[in-house]
Length: 295
Length: 228
Image 1 (tube, rainbow over the protein chains, first blue to last red):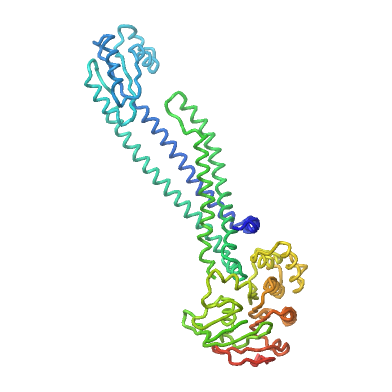
Image 2: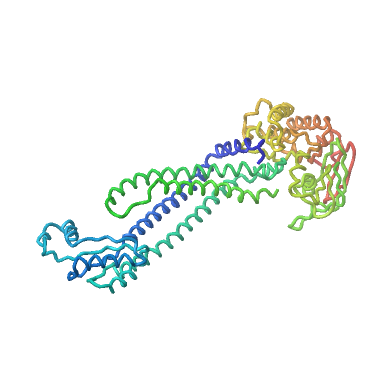
């Protein structure tokens, strides 16, 4: 595009969007609806994924210390645990602390076990570097002295990891399929708007316009339609997400779980939707106009 | 100027529209192309601005060799040859002014020059007062005059008119002819396919009669020569 004519092409594009009112509206709606679908699905998928990771990271190995062990043996066990390669962090919780937690969750009836009556054991809580390592760490710890019991959710944790892996792959495929659908729908709508103007293109060719001279306003028009179409889902999703985020985060307060913060996530999502809208609008125009230029 | 030698045109449906045609037209001539329907008149004129490509033969229009010319050179040929179509072919979403200006924007003329020239040609065809209207708000004769204004805006060396009076009442037809005559007087070559015997017989110019895809008569100051 030459600088001299670029202003003209942009003016023409805006004029054309306006004068083709209904066709433009139809195209903008198609873009808006498809991108709303794509955007909502991506927002949901990424947050489910985030929650899944939170759950994964929450999985820990609980090592119960034998009641027969004295203070020295207990500390020695703690030091041995720290030597394990895959261990990220170790937290110690005395049996008194454990009882307090039970009382906290289940009620004052458990106060009966105050003092030496406490039937619970001291516990080391191990967080592993990778969630998949829990099983290995658990079996290693079980071999150590003064260990009464090791618990890591066992088979259930394994199944959870498996399920999440599948869910992620399926989600990725669905997002890809949705984006492809959006591409197809948007470029198809633009094809229809251009098809309705094929005689116009033919006339332009007959009065001696070069292909790019005809193409530029259509390309810019496609980009404008894509942009306006994308702005609709961008505003809807931004509004819903920010409000939904605040509401849901209140419920999740105090847990290990959280949603993706709007600050980077929503910006990326909006940029993606705007990008898809503008790019497909422009490229759809180029592709659709191609066969009408052969006059 | 325009030279065709041994030109054949066979359509994909098997019809031979042009069957060994030879012709030479000089700069500044006014030429009528007459003949019965289906004789090949339209194909003949369409080949001059490469809407149709011959299957065989040579066509030279100015410096352009129309048979083995590159796709990207076609726009430049069409700026050299102005065309007035029977069905006007105006851009429906552009105003009268914009329709004429479009042909000049395509050539990337200076906007000031465009403005001046557009009003000038619209005045020549008598439509300066309707510049802001859209094509569907004009009568057939007025639309035809816009088409002529657009065709001559870039001062082409050749003006091709395919049945420019075909859809018009006799009075409007004469107005159009006066405009064409005026343009011809300024040195533009005019090639006009027509069925209008009155015009051909009253406004005398060279007549080419096409029948069965050949020139069967080439007559200076000729007659229409068919029953009308």
